Amino acid sequence: MSEEKLLKNLMSLMSGIDACLERNLKGPALTLIYSTIDTTGWLATDQTFTTRHGFINWAEKYLLTAKPLACDAVDLYAARCGLLHTFTPDSQLSVDGKARRLCYAWGTAKVQDIQRLIDVTNGYQKYAAVHVNELYEALKLGLLAFIDDIENDQPRNVRVMAKAKKFFSEWDVESVEELITAIDNS
Image 1 (cartoon, helix red, strand yellow):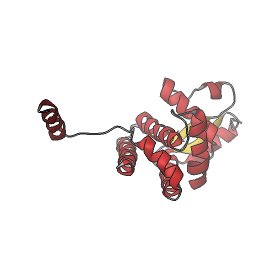
Image 2: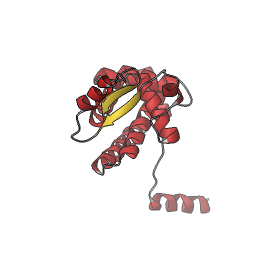
Image 3: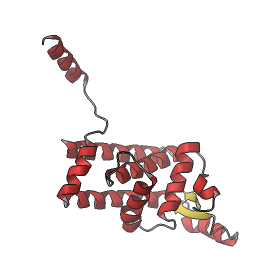
C-alpha cells in the first residue's frame, strides 16, 4: 500500500508539472519541480522534515548525476528558496554570493543563448542558465534512479515507505459514507 501511495503521489506531482508546462505556467511549474525535489530529498533522509541538506544531497546524488546541468545543487536550492518564499530569483544564498541565480530558458529558447549573455556580461559568478525542459528531464531521470535504489535496499525501502504512509490520501464519497455508517452502527 505504501509503495502504491508513493508512486501515486509522485506521479501526481509529475502530472501537475506536465499540466503547468503545457499551459506555459512558468512559476507554478518550477514550484512543483522544486517541491518534488524537496519531497524526494526528505524521503531519502532519516529526518522528520525536509531540510536544505536533504534537498542538496538528493539533487547531487540523483538529479545532477542523471543529467548534468550548468548549475549545482546549491544553486538549485537557492532558486527553490527564492521561488517558494518570495516568488523571485533572490534567496539569502544568492544575495550572500553563495549561490548563483538561475536564468531559465523555456520552450524553443536556447539555454546556450542565455549562457552567452551571462558570459558576455561577466555574470558567470552570479548567474547560471538552465533550460526548464532539461531540469524536468533531470528530475524524471533522478526519480527513476531513486526508486531503483530504494527497491534494491530493503532497510532504506522500509524507511521510505514509512514516510510515504504520511502522504496525502484520497477517499471517495462512498468510502467516507460507509465509514460514517459503520461508526454510527457500532
